[in-house]
Image (cartoon, rainbow, N blue to C red; front, side, top):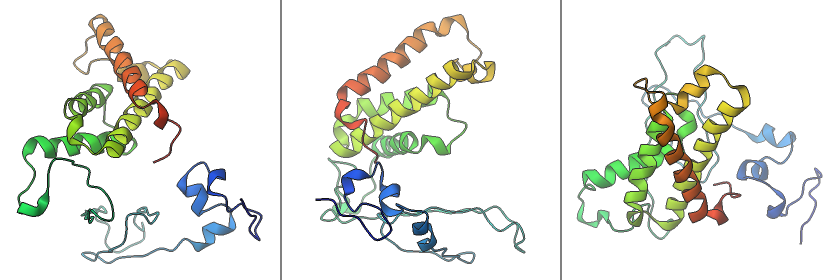
Length: 208
């Protein structure tokens, strides 16, 4: 049963559309956000299940070098299933290049909105590689990757349809300048998007 909190929000998790809305259901909730400023070379260790993000550097800071951050992610298999199903770090060896490339392609699709220079051609290439090696990925993670691919393709497609801008339309064209020859590529992109939707039809309303 859902219950109403003192601020008027509901405690029923089903009433929230995404994790951020659940964590910050009211304007007052945003007052609980805390900044954790770090000096150059310092780090923060936390569970990735904490909602977190990086902010822009202070423009008035004495050090005006670009903000560069690097993250390392570790997880015990008892806490969260690994992304790769057929590889174990027990032997202290790195995954082979094919699996490292698979993780790169997967993460590029999941975080596609962070990369302005990713073209439709790049997205499709990543998806094709992930599909080719789908049996190497954890089932839930694989679905997440394919869902984000479809979202990315729909954004590119809808962006072209909405404003008709030539620059936006160029996103669906070969970067080498091909025009008419790309009709087949566009059809392939649509086919790939529909294929991914069919394979993961029960996932597209979920927010990962």
